[in-house]
Image (cartoon, rainbow over the protein chains, first blue to last red):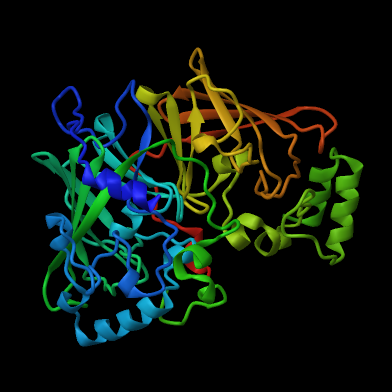
Length: 269
Length: 206
């Protein structure tokens, strides 16, 4: 599987990104053609250590020097502007890795987009909404309001916050605030606070590739705004009924066999 | 719900259900999940309900009687309908309207018994008719724990009779649990201006 992925990456897809009749980019399947999902990476890579962090992590392992310009722009762990407490918490979160995702809880930001078994991007123009619908993980969805509304003034903090979106050229821009502090926005537990504000930029660069970029602005946890991102790959197939609560294999698949019996610790949601 | 009301409600049920109900009212232990989830006492709901206890999906018709609402997204380009749950574990599933056979899951999986079954929908005039089979036995299909087996076959009819009203009617055919098909119905009310809440059952679980 990895070899095949490597070959695919070496041969860029020359098919253009599909568009709807009104000209804007279609981030989903094309009517009359194959159904598909967006996959971030194979899910069978144990992530017990940050130096084997998969492509959908928000930082590049220090030992890796990606030749791809997009991936090379991803910050290394040493470049992430943690506040001291956040750096300490991340060290624990990353080592224990018993994130909410592994226990069937909803994630947001990059972690939702990079969920296992693929993600659907579904735009409903008549409702002026865009939906991010995951197969794995919590098998849930996030609603992005595309009708020009602003964020409400008094949001109750929530796992997925409040998302508003707009098209900016060929990119979908999603602005989200209103997070609670229990949510993880990545796979290894980058700390966040209720001050978190994310801006996601989703760009389908060709038929089978999306560049997913996320800007993280959280003055409660970081000393500066920072950016990261990864690729999403179009994978033919359909989503299916997935129930994390049943036969949950996340501890084995994500954290490694040594972590199967690890219980969540008090300050990791 | 008081005892008198419970007994009245159970009166027309198969004898074995009533007997089990009465036995369990005396304090017996009942399984959380399994082929005969007989939890008829309100006191057992939070203790034994797979959805409340373990955040399993509100399978089959239970999704249409949940707090926090439900949303339909009809994807006409691909002949399918997303059914999005506001309550339960805030999950979703497909009703396929493309005429596919009711077998197998997408990606070529085996015929795994499912929480929402293999749901095949079609329009019959102004009514969406959904025929579903292929259920597992690990969920309660009603809030009170109505039993079912893998033989469960549902025919649901959803009719929006006016702007604010969706009539829901379901015929339950499960020869493994009931002596004959039976039908229930209720209405769902459109709540203008409301969004599905950010509710997740999992939030209160480890």
